[in-house]
Image (cartoon, rainbow over all chains, first blue to last red; front, side, top):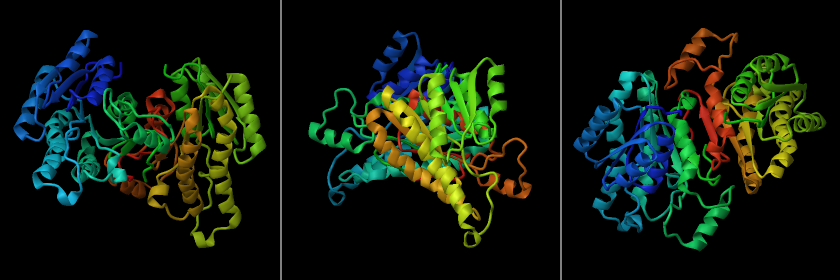
Amino acid sequence: MRFENKSVIITGGGGKIAKAYAMAFAKEGAKVSLPDIASADHVVKAIQDMGGTAISMKCDVSDEQSVKAMVDETAKQFGTVDVLINNAAYFMSVWKGPFWEMKVEEFDKAMAVNVRGSWLCAKAAVPHMQKQQKGKVVNISSNVALTGNPNYIHYVTSKGAIIAMTRAMARELGDWNICVNTVTPGFVVTEGRQVDPEYEKIRAQQRSIKRSQVETDLVGAVLFLSSPESDFMTGQLLNVDGGFQFVG
Amino acid sequence: MRFKDRSVIITGGGGKIGKAYALGFAKEGAKVALPDIASADHVVKAIRDMGGTAISMACDVSDEKSVKSMVDEVAKQFGGVDVLVNNAAYFMTVKKSPFWEMEVDEFDKAMAVNVRGSWLCAKAAFPHMKKQGKGKIINISSGTALNGGQNYIHYVTSKGALIAMTRAMAREVGDHNICVNTVCPGFVVTEGRQVDPAFNANRVANRALKRVQVENDLVGTVLFLASPESDFMTGQLLNVDGGAHFVG
């Protein structure tokens, strides 16, 4: 029980990958807060059914007031904030096409949710961590920022921004023993996700571990970065993609 | 007890950092083998005193026969090899000088121990991991490979070689579910190590977490990479330096 009574926020908590994180934290004793612009009630139910503690609330991470209310509510119910997982992203429904045809509103939306949203959540959560002189922020980037995937320049750019933001946040928060790190997942075939089987086969072949990536493959790295085991790691990028991209 | 009855080899197991890893593994139930060119008997004793299982043997990692007999002995006594931590290095006694003044013998020694040694240990341990259809290899590199430490070109170069070797190994052994990763420690002030206080203060100031790095700071990351939590991470570099360098 590495996270007994720890207060953990996972933004975008209603999604499939977030659910994998949330279940794992709950199994290790954490109280889990699951803000989402859609509903995370099904995840709360799954956690409560196994005897754990979880709450959800509607939250638009790109909106400062909405984020502040969410963090305040979490701190009120759980006493504080120990861990923030910046997982919410504008991704599943992004417009795809060449960057020279992309509309400004579409570009701005990715930056607002993925970049400003991660910053706003950290901004609101950090005072609680500073009070305790410790804390963990895990920013979920994507390995598309490493590979430079074409046809969603806004998403790729936003995920690259998160890598740089992580480093600056790490330096700004070091004096309070708050660690900020990034995880870059590979292409995750979440349950029920429609993927081109031919292309997925190629993707698997390019990896060292030649299989599809699933949501539970990410859980260990996220929990590690939230635990005392990683207390001297900050500003770093953990690429979890089965050995496709190598960084540095 | 994440490593109950696991067979773990830590090369250079008699050193101070080797000892910290060994105690970390032993506390979680592992059977620990500690080959060293010097003696690791004091570490074996420390582990047995706390009720754990450990063995040591004289081994020159740069010598193929010596490595093969070491791994055979471990497999015989512990019934297999689950984890290999390539920690042995020619480091504490390196001759420092500008690269244009370095002798060939000195250069070759660093490459023989640090690079050839890590490859030989992996080469000998691989068949045991292959037989089980899984395994973990952790190559200990160094932050000097990222920042280009001065006046020991052989050491820095050897540690860079390990980063590349890790990636190629990861691709070659992925089909057997063997993960190969690198850890890059920052400058570790092991107990009793003499360091220039002014230089050390400067080093601390460059980190996000402004304190001296000690051997225990590395243990969590090495155990994470040896555990099932990192089963979809391979070929990666984990930099554990308190946030001095950011990679990628």
